[in-house]
Every structure is written in C-alpha cells, then in structure tokens.
Image (cartoon, rainbow, N blue to C red):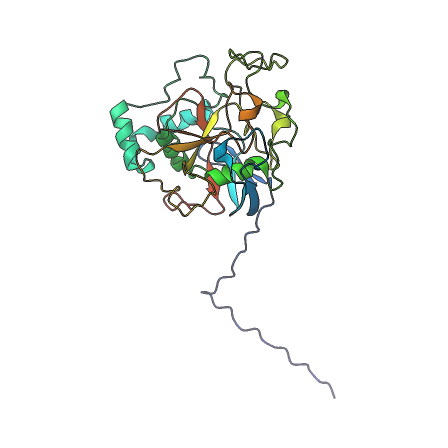
Length: 303
C-alpha cells in the first residue's frame, strides 16, 4: 500500500502586515553625505563622556569646571566646518528669504541688518570656497542648519565629538603639536605666537587641512581654525540639557562658542576650553558645523 504524505498548505499572508525593517546603529566614525550641500557627516555613538577640565589642570579657566560626566544620544556631525562653497548653496537656494528656517528673533535680526549673505564675502582673506564660512551670526548658522536638514550641535555634543570618551586634552590626544591645528603660529600678529610653526595660512585654513588633528571619530578642525557656534546658551557647569540652555527661541542671550580659532595659542584650542560666549552677531573668527540626530526630519529636529 502506498501512503501519500500530507502537505501542509501555507496560510496566505495578510497583505496589511508589514515586516519591520531594523536599521542598524552605525559604529563610531561611520560617514554619510548630506543631500542639501554635499557635506560629509560622521557618526558619534551614544554614551557617557567626560566634560570639562580637572580641578588640578593649571591651564583651565573657571568656567570649564567642575569636570563631570554627561550622557548624550548618538548623533551625526559634520566632518568639517561649513565652507563658503557650501554656504553659497544656501544663499542661492533663497535661504535668506524663507522664514521657516529662521527663529523669530533671527528673522527680525536679518531684516534690521539687511543681511543677504555672510559679511566677509568681499574680503579675500576669508572668502575662498574651501575656507570655513565666517562672519555669520548665530541666527544665520541656525537657519543654514535647518535648511540643510539638521541643527547646531549642543555644547555637550560638540565636546564629545572633539575628545571622545577618554577625556583627552586635544582631539588627537594629550600632547600638543602645532602642526596639527590652525592656531597662532609664525603667521600670527600677536606676541604669544609660536614662531617655530608655519602652516602658510595667515587667517583661516581650508577645512580638513590637518589630517593628524582629527578627533577619535575622525572629525576635523575641532581645535582652532574658527570658533564654532553651538546651540547652547552660555551657562555654568555642570551641563544640563533640560535647564533651559537649549531653548532655541530665547532672544538677546549669549550663545556658546567652542574650539578656539586661528589667532589663539595652544591653551585656548583644548577640547574642554574656549567656552566663550557671544551675542548672536557675526565675527571674522566665528563659523559653525551642522549636527543631526539618528533620525531627523526638517521641522521635527531632536535635542
């Protein structure tokens, strides 16, 4: 007798049932390109890091203390500062005429100052395509970041991108090397210049010029070149993201600058230093870079 085995008939799939797609979390240093301006962004993983300077560090300023531990979510950050060439795309796209990218205070500032482009684009010392854009206010930096589909990094995010999790002094480690950053070298006009170093740049350097000066995640120019606007209002440490300092709608407040610039000495380009603050207006030594959370959508940007 022949026995025919029974074959189970599979149930039809429910057409309304979707199989979820799991997006893997990038590893530190992973890169991606941003559509709006072609900028390369680097992934900084979530976790705790050391923020600020140790009490026994003789080079520190008071507002770098107390040193404390801060936890941040994973985020993307531009590998370099935003360049003049990239910022030109924002201008050409009508970014100065589209109010949705601006804070209320920024839109008013733009009108009062008749701002239509960075104020230094007529100065040959600062207007080359690969130089970091400068002479942009905090309001302009904020608007650009929104247009590009991101936001400004918080002060904590900036510092983690610069020093990683081991509390290093400079993005590359604990030992100073003047050939790894754009700072006050032989070309600088100030008495404290380091005449033993000459990178050939009298002001800002083209972004990404110092390959040995990258951070643990591969981020360039976090020591020197230009100060960088961050989202945070200036406030005392310890840093707390929920204490109001990340309120983007505040007006007439001083925003934090990080990183030092091309006319600073080595002590001012440390990763924990240069917690300067400035009214939102522009300056020849101030630029910025863009950050984005793990999943972002223009108009619902996360902090």
